[in-house]
Image (cartoon, rainbow, N blue to C red; front, side, top):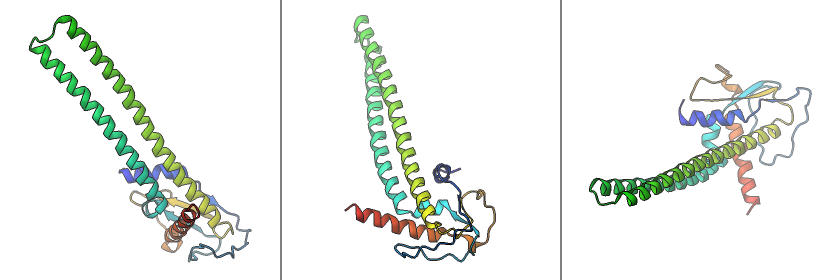
Amino acid sequence: MNKASLFSAAVLAGLSLIAASCNNTQQNTTGENKAPEATAAQGAIVYFNLDTILNDYDMANDLRSVVETKVNSINQEVTRRRNKIEKDIKAFSDKLNKGLLTQSVAQTQNQKLVEQQQSFETYAGQKQQEILEEQQVMMNQIADAINNYITEFNADGKYAMIIATQGDILSTPVVAADPALDITDILLEGLNAAYVKEKNSQK
């Protein structure tokens, strides 16, 4: 499973299958940011390709860019500190091998390096946890936005169920389906329109 699949699987874990009562026939007539109608019939079980949504959903791309910037900054700082410790250890080892340090000084410097190494390992572990938390929050935000939009999208109960699938591995739970039941493009258009509207409202 590649990185994209792992990402989509994590978001999929935050999505619920959206089931709607076929008895609810109230129609949304506002028309504002409304996606085009699907070809699937009333009461159908439809699906969307989650990988496609994640690749082309503007909100997902924006959040991913922000998190990647943070992760790169963290990794650069971790690498800088690691290189500094490695440089100090090498310098100490060179002096020790050349007999340039007394036993007392060598012991003091060695202890200092041990403490620096332990401090670095603690720091690196904390930063790794920070990265995981940033990524998890991002995935939760995306899953929540998709869930909320799909709930509103199917508020009239047109579809009996909406199922999320992953596209670049064996589709789960849909292995084969009529393309007419694929509402990926409709959802994507609506999600992006809603995201643009939200961003504009914050200006």
